[in-house]
Length: 399
Image (cartoon, rainbow, N blue to C red; front, side):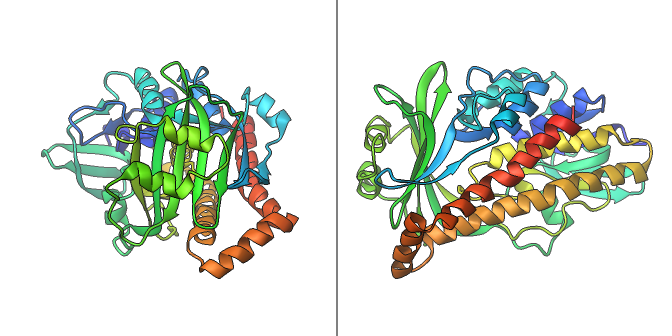
């Protein structure tokens, strides 16, 4: 029989959450990472009350950096078009002071790593290939090491090699047609009490208050259409030309950002939604399964959800019975794949509506957003309905 219950490839948020949750469930799990050393890295992300609940259960302390806020979609001049309202009683049950919070991935990652046992992560192990049989999976690494596990989990990102071996006919990632400038700054003299996503005819500029290294800060982003353009030479002027006219405090946030050190460009890639995540005893999670656009703003959060729910179903399986293991994997996929496929599709569609339609249709779009109540309501329900359902399920069905 296999030496490990679960082998996880990739020590990002999904892989580490899976390792912590599986160990908490009493399973023998290890996370294999190709890097020489796992270090806290990354810019700003969004985490919601589902992620807060999961991390709290795993012992990860983020209470002082979870700065829960309401969220609004606005026109560039500040007019509110839609509000994301989550059931207040549900938030109270989750002990969350708001639905979502801006957060620096670097700080979240460091706090997750603080909870990692010394033997959980195995560095310098780059995945090469796997072989399956009735009893489990044999995993080969480029350094020559071979590992046996009852379950193999691909948490190895948008260019997942495990996905490539499982489903070789799936096309590789390609540009979504959107570029994102991601930045952050300290909030010196700037106040805001909600997360804001605002648009003019061509661009999105959003911002979210956050706490980083004990300081009040903002994360912010500019989303624009991308057709293969090279980055500009003068980034500061480029960004201000596009969104410097947006309503306060947008310009103050731009002015207080060090554009050389606190701003970078991300060319968003995607894959066609997968019809299957699991074959035999091998499954996927996080960006390996469902890379998402910035209009979901929740890639890391969905990865954390995947990992925790996978552990919950494997915890209930008989790990000495291949049929029971595969039934657990099927339950995991049946819950997560429709939810994440819907979320990523909704995000892609919003991106297309805001950045890919011709100029004359953008005027029609904006007129409808400003004058037809049902349009804003569709955005509100698209964001909230399934998210509320998931939070209830985590609170009621999983422990």
